[in-house]
Image (cartoon, rainbow, N blue to C red):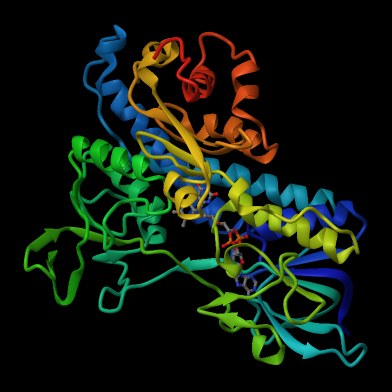
Amino acid sequence: MAKEYDLVILGAGTGGYVAAVHAAKRGLSTAVVEARDIGGTCLHRGCIPSKSYLKSAEMYKTMQESLSYGIEADNVRLQFGRVREKKNQTVQQLHKGVQQLLAKHEVDVYYGHGRILGASIFSPTASTISVETETEGENIMLQPKQIMLATGSRPATVPGLDIDGEYILSSEELLEAETLPSSIIIVGGGVIGVEWASMLQDFGVEVQMIELGERLLPMMDHAVSKEAEKRLKRKGVRIYTNTELDPASLTKNKELAVRTLAGETLGAEKMLVAVGRTGNTGDLGLHNTEVEVQNSFIQTSGMYQTKESHMYAIGDVIGGMQLAHVASREGIIAVEHMLGNHPEPLDYKHVPSCVYSEPEMASVGWTEHEAKDAGLEIKTSTVPFQTIGKALVENDPEGFIKMIVDKDTEDVLGVHIVGRKATELINEGALAVYMNASYLEIQGAVHAHPTLAEIYAEGALAIDGKAIHY
Ligand code: FAD
C-alpha cells in the first residue's frame, strides 16, 4: 500500500530540504527521498567542506606571515590530517542539524533511490514514486499529490580525461583524499577550479591551471577576472588560458603527463577536472512522464513547473546558476506556487555569486560588458581597498569595489568586489540591486567606521567623482 503525501521531494540537498521544511511549515504533509546523505552536495561535497579547507589554508598563510601582525610564530606546520578532521567535524555537525530540522517539522525521510513510476491508478494527474532502499528487494511506494525533483548535479567530465580516482579526480575525490598531492593540474578556471587553485597553492601544492577560454571566471566582470589571474599568478599558480589539453597524449606512470594542443607537455601527481556540472536526470523514471530534459537539465517554467503540472523541478538539476542559495529559493517559490499563490519570481540578476579563494571575489547584477552589450547607458566607479582604513588594519589592502550604475535611473545595476571579506560585503550590493537602490542612497546611508563596508560609500561617491579618500 502506497503512503500518501501532499508533496514528495526527490533529493534532500539544499534545494530539497529547504523546500521540505517550508512546505511542512505551510501545512503540507511532506516526505523527502534521499539516495545518499541529507544535505546533498553543498553540505557533504561542496560549499561547506571546501570552505572549511579554504579557512585552514587562510590560517596557514596568515600564520606564516604572522610577523607582519607583530606576532612571532615559530615552526608553523601544516597537519593535513587535522585539517581534514576539522572539515569532517563541521560537516557532521551540520548534517545532524539538518536531520533534526526535518524531524522537528515532521518531514518523513526515506533513504534510497527514488523513481517516478508514471500516472497513478488513483489519479491520472498524480504519480507514484518507488524508493529502492538498501535492503535488497525492498521497494517503498509513495503516493504524492505533488512531486518536486531536486536531484542536483554531478561533476561533468572531459572525454579522455575520465575520473579514475587515482590520477584524475573530481572535487568529490579530492575532498576525500587523505593526503595532499605535491603537484596538480586543474582543468577548468571557473569558481570551483579557482577556489581549489588558491587553497592548494596556499597549502604548498604546485598548481597548474588550464582554461579553455581567454580568462578565468568567465561569468564575472572582466576586471575581476583580471585581478584573479594576477593574484593567483603572484601566489605561484601557473595559469594557461586559451589552452586545451590533448587527452590522447595522456600517460599515467607514478605521475601523469599530458600535452596541450600547442605541444607543451605538463606533468603533475594528480589532475582535478572542474569543468562544470551535469544534471542528475538519468534513472529517475522521467521516461514515464512528459517532463522535458535538455542537455541533462530539466526544463521548467519560471515557477519551476515541468510539462507535468504536478511535477516541479528546482536547483542544480534545472541548470542555470548552480548555487545553493539559488536552489533553496527556487524550492520555496515552487512550494508557494503549488499552494496556488503567486510568489515573486526569482530575478537571477539579483543573485550574488561568490568565489571564496584568496583573494575573495563576489559579484551581483550586471557586469560592465553585459550592460553595454544590452545597450544600457551606464556610469561606473572603481575604488581600491587601499583607501579604506579597516583594510589596512586587516593587513589586506589589495583589491577593489566596482559599481555599475544606470545613467538615467541612477539605480545600482551591479557590484563587483575583489578583496578582504568580499563574499560577506556583497550582500549590501545584493540588497541595493534587489531594492533598485540609487547610488545616491548608498552615498546617503552612513557606513560605520572603521569597516570594510565603507568601500560602498566611497564607491557610490566616486560615481560623481566625490570620493573622499580616492
Ligand atoms: P544537491 O545538493 O546536489 O542535492 C541533490 C540530492 O539529490 C543529493 O543529495 C543526491 O544524493 C540526491 N539524489 C539524486 N538523485 C536521487 C534519486 N534518484 N533519489 C533520491 N535522491 C537522489 N554553491 C554555493 O552557493 N556556494 C558555494 O560556496 C558552493 N561551493 C561549491 C563547491 C563545490 C566543490 C561544489 C561541487 C559545489 C559548490 N556549490 C556552491 C554548488 C552547490 O553545492 C549546489 O548548487 C547545491 O548543492 C545544489 O543544491 P541541490 O539541492 O539542487 O542539489
